[in-house]
Length: 638
Image (cartoon, rainbow, N blue to C red; front, top):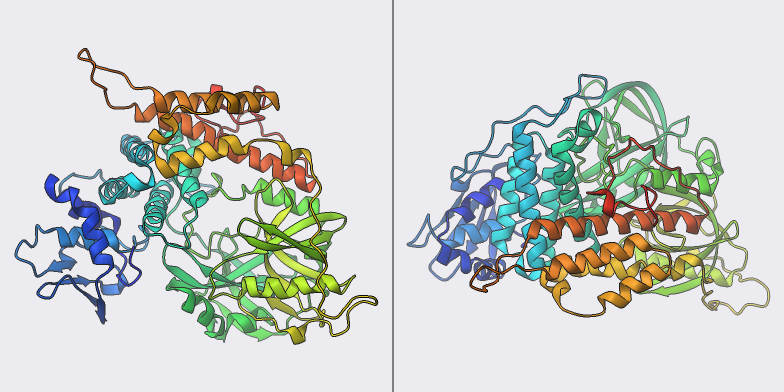
């Protein structure tokens, strides 16, 4: 995926790839690689790519997005039926399907747009429409084909099929499923392009969501259907007058090409509100936006200023996720801020840690909640439920696969605090290394804001911290850079200046010994290498037996089913192998993926000492595909 090209609507990519002949489709991946390495020149809304010495390719992107197939023009002799146009569309970032209208591909008529679910309080659709059921089937088949092929086999042709299914889903009134399908394509392109920001877990989660939504949508009714369908736009409700206090600011840098800053504020009652400034861009925009003024009503403040000041707003409008509106009727003036140790911000840290973690886990950390009936834009996907406000003492560092992280004592609990982002342009990891030096100053207390990450050990991503020498100030760890001069000058008695204490090992627990990684590893291997990787004979029986030996009977059955469906191939009367049953393999993989996600959630709760409430029997929104592969706690043994 080339970040220098303008985003292209999913329908445009699907249309251009569908128009290729079978011979050209075989050469499409090579064409994408060639386009990605050619020089790019931007002149206003026109982007030119020099395919070779005699051929130029033009992408016309009014408004920054290519929305029509005719907007991609090639100067070669085979145009418009050439490979270059489809390769350019496949190499460009995928445009957000909710940003602009897209034409339906002429080669396959799309269903008429179906009205989406009514907002809360209004009439609710009784069941899915025929168009929605057909779109769900198309999504399921396209996602199953991607899972069958794996990352290496999911080239531009399979990606285009998934984009076509996403476009059909959006027209059928399924924006949530369409958005997750686009996320799968974006993650696939990052993986195939060796993007350092690629995470296999992100691709696995997106693919799991698409298959889950496609599985549940045809049979869902009432409020569950409304939640699964989603909404394209966030509704804003009037909220009267607000007195907001700046809390902290964090950079946003997504794999979909968006960057900026989100500023968190708190009102007098302790409710969190956000003021985002997110637009297409990279790490430079994420850092630069911290000093770029954001207008709220008739007041303009930079995120760095707003995170330390306050706002008095009249005629405020707020979305369900806490985003503050900036419409024409909003009036705002700058006001004084508050220290983290003063009201109303102090009450955020007064909430017990167990209660904060329980709230975050109830919001389904790491998985877009089925209760969220809106498709969120970058910067909107956090409503503050997963934020933790902790009082800690840094006691050392501990080494993880992704690098060193802080080990801190939080009311007797050893908590790992990792960098929120690994991009070298952001100061997260550099600030983390300096904060680790506080371990030499025994007894130094910090107030921090972190984001919970599901793990079998207490672990969170560090976002902001109180200043080591000035408790009334704070440091936005993704925007501000700490210096050694900011650390305490005098270490504790008996400690050499600048010395660092030895890392403190995490004590073993039952969560450490639970071998859920055996199933999780196979789930990730299927996404990375495709069905064939799990079809090879190997250590399937010992792994399943080990899971059962630890009391994870359902995990053992899911692992055995996953291997069986991967290896099963029927033959015709002449002894030739028939195509694999991709639908059955996708269902088995989905059951295993949902199970591991639910077990991770349970292990995370156990690590923090939190008791999760048992869901009501009627709550089927997060239930697995079939009772035989239900997640733990939904009937049967774990």
